[in-house]
Every structure is written in structure tokens, then in C-alpha cells.
Amino acid sequence: MRRSRLKNIILLLCLGLSGLVYAQEASKPKPVKVATPQKGKIEQKTAYTGNLEADAMVEIYANAPGKLVVLKVNEGDSVNKGDVLAETDARELRLALKQAEAALKAAEAQFLTVKATAQIKIEAQAEAAQAALDAAKAQLSQAQALAETQVTSQFEQAKAGVRIAEANLKKALKGARNQEVQQAKAAVSVAKATLENAQANFQRVQKLHEQEAISDQNFDNTKAQLDAAKAQHKSAVEQLSLVEEGAQQEDIIAAEAQLHQAQASLTLARVTVATEDWKTQIALAESQGRQAEANLLSARELVKIRAWEHDIAAAEAQVNQASEQVNLAKKRLADTTITAPINGIVVNRSADLGDYAAAAGSPGSNPILTIVKMDVVKAVFTVSEADLSNVAVGKAVHISAGQQYISGKINFISPIVKPEDRTVRVKAEIPNPTYQLKPGMFVEVNIDLSTAEDALLLPREAILDIQNGVGHVFVAADGRARQQTVKVGLAWGENISILEGLTDTTPVIVSGHRQLVDGTKIVVVK
Image 1 (cartoon, rainbow, N blue to C red):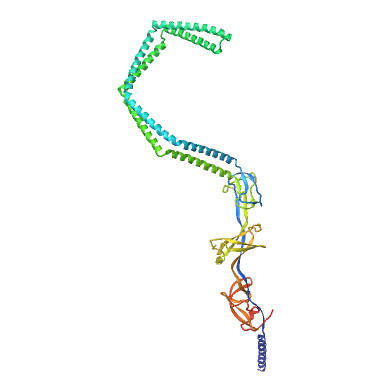
Image 2 (cartoon, rainbow, N blue to C red; image 1 turned 60 degrees about the vertical axis):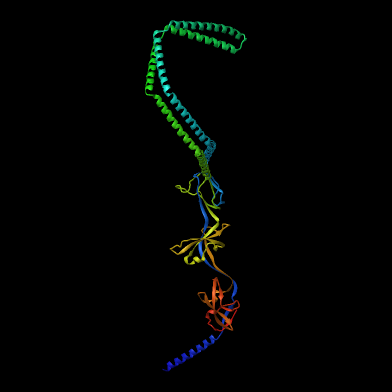
């Protein structure tokens, strides 16, 4: 019992001493550091990670497949848009262009001819049709007036032909008459005298010619007269022989054949008269007249509708078509020259001079060259769906890649949110004139969210219990800490802006304030 009392007394003494020590400590001023808010600029930023991509990467194929006959670049070469990179064999295409140009010239010449003559031709056709109609009318009139007479005349001619053929046959059967023999002998005598005279004249002229007293032409004429006299004498002798001998069997046969032929013609003429064939001729003439009238109407209609304009338009269309063929041939020829579509650097060359270059899309085709545009690169990063308000096309970004810090602008925001991670793909265009940034590099992308000019700034650690833009600080007033509610704004790095509750002269406790309560004694230390 006595020991228990002793313990209690000792415990009470200890508690009393502790309270005395605590009271003494609580009454001691707390050392703190103070600072006044400073005016300055503050920017709020957010950072994302991403990678660099080339602004453009183009694989170069042959536009006109063929053997490479020119190849001007190697890997690592810089090229400008429009530079000639390579050429494929163009011999056949040059020939095709010449053929197309020749066809165009021919079409142009034809067009000029048609343009100059089409109207004349069609009008001439109308005039010719009119003339044909006039001729058909005249022929009809003639047929109507003379057809029956002509048929009757042909019948009479056929009868006369039979009588002549009968007389010839009778003559052939009887032989020549005495007076015919005498006539043939007289003809021989005349021909002989003519020959003798020609021979004497020739001998005289021949001597003169040998003496060069007459010209060669006179000599030749005399000789020709002699030859003619000889031929005439020979013919007269042969005719006398035929007359004296009488008709041969073949002459009789020929005379009989002529008689048969004349009899057949007479029979045909009788049929023509019996059938009134002249009516058929008149009907044919009438039909030809109607056809001529139709042709005239057609020709006049062509004139009326100015049909030559259609011919001219067709010829002009041929010119246009030939011109298009020339343009196509020129394009195909131009396609044999492969030029750079962009400024950039050749990063790959997969063909050599003499290789066959295939067109894109053909089986087994490979690009000849690969060019990357490097003067601009793209920083590609993703932004969460919740942070979409932080980005907008045209908004500035700042990237860091290694030791390089370069600004650019957002130029693309994907319209699609990826469902697997609820992010959106964003691209920013970054200038790269020195090619120091390389596609594939890892980068950090910083985006300015907002900026405040001439703001009251305090170290962020001086603000306690910030919720919904409101916190509190301790200010030094008469040796004590006084709690002050403040409204805060932008925060970036170590600083935060004060919107309400303080002035730029308010001494704010910035160190040692976490152990303070309102009214605590303080001592300001440096």
C-alpha cells in the first residue's frame, strides 16, 4: 500500500515537471522565414512523350517501265523537288511520238482541205443532181418520142441485114464475075506502073544522095514511097489471085454464119416489136427520172442543213484526237525521266544502272529510290481523352530531344479516340533546317496551357491545404503567425500565382510554417 502511494506521488511529480517544460516550450517564439509575393510572369505547361517522324517519305518507282539508262544520285545525296534522278530507255517512245506528230499533221492538212472544199463539194453535188435530173427528163422525152420508131427501125435494119447476108452467101457460092476479074487486073496494072515509077525515082534520088545533093530526109521519103508502091503492087496481085480462084470453102461457111446471125437478129427484132419493148424503155426512163428527182431533193437537203459543217466538225475532231495522241505520247516520253517529287535526302537506292525498273504495283516491283523530307519533322505523341482541351491545331509546342530545344505547331489531331487506352494521336510540325533532328528520335513535347503576366508569385510550398483553388498561408504580424485564406491561380515549377488575399508587401511565412497555428509566436530569421 505504501509503495503504491509512493509510485503515484512520483508519477504526479513527473507530470507536473513535463507540463512545466511544455508550457515553457510553447511560450518560446518559433523561428520562421518570410518573403513578400513577387510580381512576374508564370506559364502553366503540360508534357508528353513521343517520337519524331519524317514530314514525308516517298518511294520512287519508274513511271515508264524499262531499263535504267541514267541514274544520277546515291544514298545520302540531297535533292530538290524537280531534280532529275534517273531515266529509263525511251527509244520506242520517241518513235511513237514522231508517229503521233505525223498523224497530227495529216489530220490538220485534211481538216484544212475539208474546211476549204466541203461546202463547195456539197453545193456541187446539188448542181450535179439538178443536171442529172434535167438529163433524165430529156432522156424520158426522147424515149417517149423515139422509142417506138427506134424499135421499128431496128426491125427494118434486121430484115435488111438478112437480105445482105443472103446476097453475100449467093455470091460466095457462084464465084467472082468477069467484070470483077477485069477490075482486079486493072488494079494490078496500075500498081505495077506506080511501082516502076517509084523505083526509077528512087534510083535517081539515091545517086543524088550519094553525091550529097539532097538531104537525108528527102532520100528517106523517096524510099518510103518505093516501099509503099511495092506493098500496093503485092496486095493488088494477091487480090487478083483471090478473084481468079473464087471463094474458098471457109468464105462460104463465114457467109452462111453471117446469114444465120442476121436471121437471129431479125427474130429478136420481131419479138421486140410484138412485145412493144419501147414501153419498157419509157418506163425505165421514167424510173431514172424519179431517181434523179430524189437525188436532187437529198442534195438540196444537205445544202439546207449545211452538211459541210458536220464534215468540218468531224475533221476537226480527228485533229483533236490526233493532238491528244501527241500529248499522250509526250507524257509517256516525259515519264521516262524520273524527277524528285519533294526536297529531301536519298536514304535508300535499290537499283543500279542497267537494271530493269518496274512500275509501282506490278508483280515483284521494288522502289528505285527512297527520299525523306528532312527540313521539317513531325513530333507524334498521344494525349488522353481528358486532356483534349490542352491541344488545338495551330497551338505552339516546345520539344526537347537530347540537348536540342525547338518550337513548333500542332498541325493534326486525330478525330478518333483509341478505345484501348482512350488516347488521341497528335502531330506537331517542327522546323529542322539543319537536319539535326532525326526521324525515330525520342522527344518530350511541352504545351503551354495558360500564361499570366504581372502575377503575384509565391513559392508553392508556402500555400497549405489547396482545394478548388483556395488555400491558406501564415503571415507575420506583430511577432505572431496569422492564418490568411488565399485564392490561387496558375502553378508551374516551384511557383504559384496568388489571385486574392495578399499584396506584394504582405510578409508571408515560407519556411517553418507547417508547425504553426493561428497566433503562434514567431521570430523571423534570415
